[in-house]
Amino acid sequence: MSNLKNDFYEYVNHDWLEKTEIPADKPVIAAFSQIDEDVEKLLIEDLRQFAAGEKVYEDENFKKFIQYYQVALNVEERNRLGATPIKGLLDEVEALNDFADYAAKFLADQYRGLPGSFSFSIESDLKDSEHYAFYASAPGLILPDVTSYQEDNAADLLASYADTAAKLLVKAGYEKDAAETHAQNAIKFDELLVPVVKTAEEQQDYVGAYNPVDVETFDSSVDFIDLKDTFNELFDGKAPEHVIVTDPRFFDNVNDIYTAENFESFKSWILIRTIFRFSGLLDLETRDIAFEFTKKLTGQPELPTIEKSVFRQATGAFADIVGLYYGKTYFGEAAKKDVLEMIELVVAMYKERLLTSEWMTPETAAKAVEKLEGIKPYIGFPDKTNPIFDQFEAAGYDQNANYLTNYLYLTELEIAHRLSVFQDKVDRELWFMGAHQVNAYYSPVDNIICFPAAILQYPFYSYEESRAANLGGIGAVIAHEITHAFDSNGAKIDLHGNINNWWTDEDFANFEERVKQMEDLFEGVEVDFGLKVNGKLTVSENIADHGGLTCVTKIATRDGLDLHDLFENWARVWRNKPREEFLKVRVATDVHSPAKARGNRQLSNTDEFYEVYDIKEGDAMYLAPEDRVYIW
Image 1 (cartoon, rainbow, N blue to C red):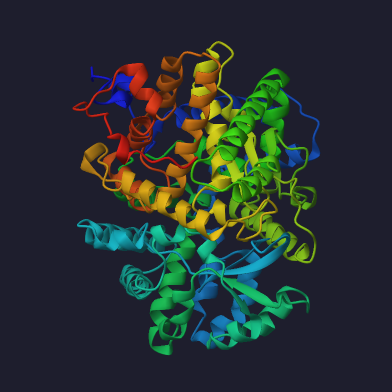
Image 2: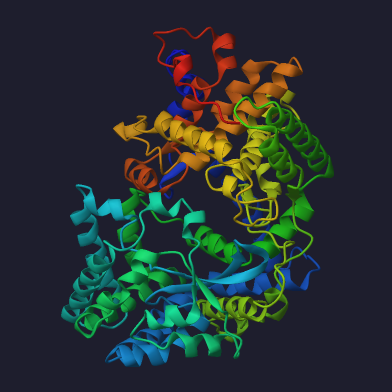
């Protein structure tokens, strides 16, 4: 067993790490995913009973979900149809001869949410958060990140992608030679994108992605399509005045990429993105073929069972509806009351620390407190669900419907709804995740924190655990989410959810200096398999972890609680056992530090940890006082 003074995370989680096996159908096992697995088993059994008529839940939209779920689970029909449901989409791409043809198809693709040259979305406006804005973004790459192309295994991964893509096209009826040509062309086109799209490190700065451009300028910057006319049609003659360009470098180079010379490669790229996107909604053989690339990328040996896959896909599509059922059925008011009390404790401590900050002036601290006190908590499950489900009518199981058709129909409803509300005020009652999902979030544009019902379970929360242990679990998560209001992005957004400088110049310079210190604190920290943390990529989440742990530690200290319980549960909630291939992807792309770094590094940065465990210079957990970072 590890010495707690050298590796506290390993010390606390030793038995779990030794005994826990990563399931063959997962790339990682963690505290989050274990709860998720329990919720999944519970709901799959409930859905089996609903589908069999053994249970009844009187909600019309939930009944629609059951119908959708049954169609998705109809493996016999999916196998009978094979790749037939996607052939119409592939034929549309095959019929394209040049970018003029693609421009004529572009509008229909936008309505259906199909893969395209770039993507549009309607989200809250970061400078007018009560209203929506129209965002334009670059397409994704084949590999997880720009930096992935510089890794030693990049050639192997691209070869696996090409091989998998060719097999998928052969399954869809293509000749082998044609399929292989398309696969190689797609990789050629992907090569054109790599130098101009953002890295994951650049993407984590979402405030920096706010670049408004007037529609006329944006239209004139893209040669191969008349975007102004497209926008007028999309918005029924009421096109937005501005487009928020999230990837300026990509759009600065767009006309050098989408050229007549590159059209055939582009066409192959669209074709293959389409079949990859929908492969999991077709027959089981197509699903198995597509998994070959995922297996290479993540190290996951096996696909989940079709029952699990369908559950995850279908409940993801109907997250509001399934979450509402889960919350109303399994979430207790006592837990909600307890968490609300904990939020009040955290907010009170945060306020005290802001007002007594040694590096921030009273003027800025007052603004920070104003934002803090404006944070609205959402706990358990929402009062409202997305209205698209009222409109949805699935082609049912008994009508030999196909899964892909139902999926595309739901997607079209969602896009049509987003377009229809563009001129309306943002509906802040809608949640970003279902209550059955094991997670939590802070929304900067809404200034809300959200804790779905499913996360309120051990080790994050339990009636049977001490108050200190719960503070180290869900308490730290609450304080973590609140800290996102003041992290490297949140600090640039005011209490109304708008990009706005509410700092004095001196205070913001001090804050930026501390952000850099947090980057340096995590830069190069070694985790499993000798991989190292990217301090800049993970800085916002590391600030949130720091603020979370600091806040609950101060509460527990003030109230005379057992800090052993708090620190041990802090390490426990981050327990995580990944496959090497998967962790490589996460280190390159995830804004969260790997679990071991979260578990250990924040404790090394916490003064009280030294007192409780008598950590001294020479211990691996020791960090010199002058190297510790204090922000919140």
